Length: 360
Length: 213
Image 1 (spheres, helix red, strand yellow):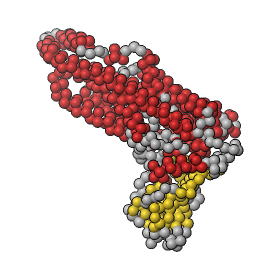
Image 2 (cartoon, helix red, strand yellow; image 1 turned 90 degrees about the horizontal axis):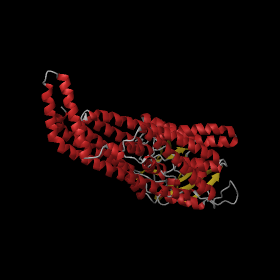
Image 3 (cartoon, one colour; image 1 turned 90 degrees about the vertical axis):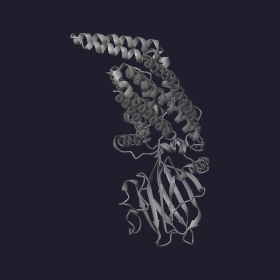
Image 4 (tube, one colour; image 1 turned 135 degrees about the horizontal axis):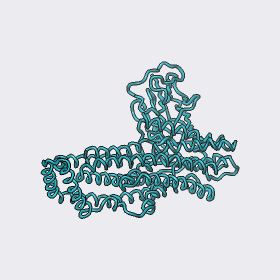
């Protein structure tokens, strides 16, 4: 069955892949738009869309929490016990904020999909990058504002340098993934083509068996043979297994993703920290920033886990069609890798175009 | 089956990019007071804005600035910041956009600008002069940020006033949450219908119109 269907499906596959690529390109191009910072706070990259539905609700909620933060900091200044309210608010803000803007979850989720990471690693990457993001905000404001007495302008400039490095890292990460996954996909594709004739033969063999009286036994046996045969050629002779590509390396490998995503501090956190500093309770700002990070981590981790789950589901579907299914899975990885790459590029160029952003 | 996998891939990409498209919430909150300025001949010469920033942004903007007295910023101490603010806003069209007698309003560079620091909040005063004074038949302008990074809200009391306006010029002000039809009217409320030629585009825009029939 799979083989007789694949020739008809092949053009469809190609069209679908092209469409998916076009969608990625469009999405990436969008990111390059309007990225600037009036009044010296880095502005979001996205153009305004009328917020409605769930997204609108998320935006309304985070705006509400954000607006309440300054009151909570003032309250914490007047009464130390009010700091718990501030922390709770920061946590909620983090959860909602991460669901809205920010490149973290898109890059982490795509990275996890491209690399066929486990959900555990997805969660670990999310928490590590969110923690790093909070840490960078605290260190930035701590060093620049507290120690050096930098102005908003100075901090804005520092953030922009960090941004360039962060976006460049995302681009490099994407390029590396694209190189590895692209090669694997190409290898699978050619492996599959070389396989085709033998493939036909194997299935014909299976078909012959199925006419035998011992129907079930013969059929299963034939298929088992066929699968083994296929693995031997596709998996080992013509290209490495996905597992091998992911390879060992553990934290070292994940570190690139963590740093690329976590390097750029969130504007909201910087504003909260500076405001807390102005109120003379910098420590409360630090605590609030880490609670925001915790909230962000939970949201990003949830999205990463969903991505891993979806990929697992796709893999199970793909396994019913050993040839084209494997190719489709490779295609998915390449698409995710390409997304990371284009995303980084768009962020980078979007930033570069608007470099005359002015500080406050 | 293949289609399912690809659909999934596309869905994943769209999910990632779609959520990404959602803009951030505003990080800067401005309370707007504006005055439409006319000359002795009754021609409009420009718009005088007084924009008050929220406490959090005000703290950020004044961070590290030299001050002689703790908690106090003089107009002189804030002069460099005001300069940066007005020059940099040019790129964003001063967040003020509209039509005058059917043509797009062309503003010259801002004049008479300064910052004021009261109750830990900064207020930016600046005048946007028209390139040339114009006798108004109808004028409509919005104060808003299309990217909604800066949230502009009209002041509660008398957000927009006119200075030296001819007697027949009527001012109408609509807040974003009002919607077009319930445009709040200052002064006499004879013009209370939405103008089909000027649809209420952005839900965040503050719409100001003047009719001099």
